[in-house]
Length: 444
Image (cartoon, rainbow, N blue to C red; front, side, top):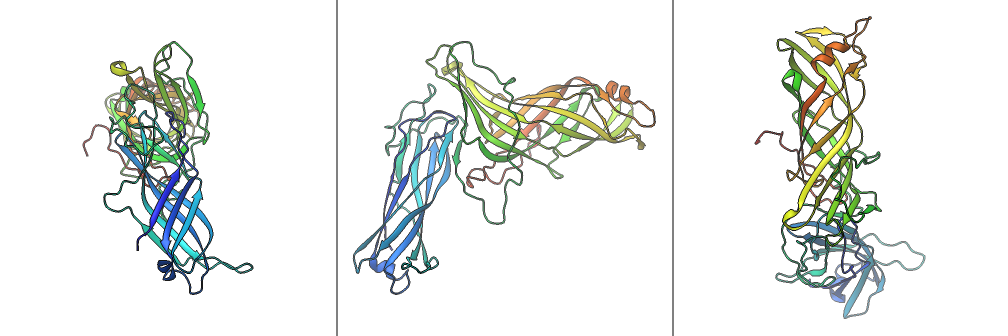
């Protein structure tokens, strides 16, 4: 069966990094022969109701994702005795947010059309009678439109914005493409079994724009894009000359809950002070408890379990400057407290009570530079923390605060975390389910 498909959609001529590009509304016209429909609809049907879902490839530089322009509806269409039937579908389509300059190209792919006979007035509609799947003919060009997203010297126009011309292949900058839509993952599978990240963002540790014109600060209207990711790593305790595994992938690792690209900060290259782009995401990470054994003071084996209490995490990626002076940055930062329990000295339990913890939360600042691509692709983040003194350790009048402060507290404690890809459930083809990254320092 052959069908003629016409797709029409308006897109803005240009877009901005970190801000949604909203195409649409879209119309999809499907022209079928009356004869073909006779074999698909109940006998005697004199009108048809249909819905269409078009898969659209959204590509920028050498990255691409599949967007679903779903549930485009066509009203009851009368069926002629013979000849062609034109089903005209229309509806809103999802927006697209990109994190780097460059042409954004929209290309039509597979089309699915659900058909059912229209009910007569006062009657209930029939159930769906048939589903058609259409694909472009071999060699057919399905390009719909191109939107230019400027923002740096690498964003040279490669086509006319808002037309169906080719965009340039470009160099991958890795800032990611997010399609904001309400799709759900496959039935029975929840790739992100965590709630959306909540809490206040903190931009104090992100590299700031050089002096000059003010930056444009924008809270993304959608509040960010919900996703989740795995992050695993190692935390060293310098005084003990040892380390513990964080979020052990061999056990039951926890997921980071992410609201990706929740806030943006931008300044054009032509402005005083030069180009600056920062994309801020919010994360929550409830880590499972860790367990490790150290040689305290170099000779006494001590094992303990460690509970982590983490505050909201701000993840900032971006770049400063342009051309050869362009510098990429990535950083993640949050407040953390430690609590010790189930302590054993040379195998003998040491009752430290239920509130043996650092006296105050301390800030964890992890930097990735070029090793951390963006919140979608992940990467390696590292930093050093200063562990505060301990308090509340001991029971029955025994004060063990000084023991743990002397053996653990102090500066120079390395944390190395590797984040895997972030799954975005609203775009099932965008890196779902989340991948488990390698442990830092390993090749497998």
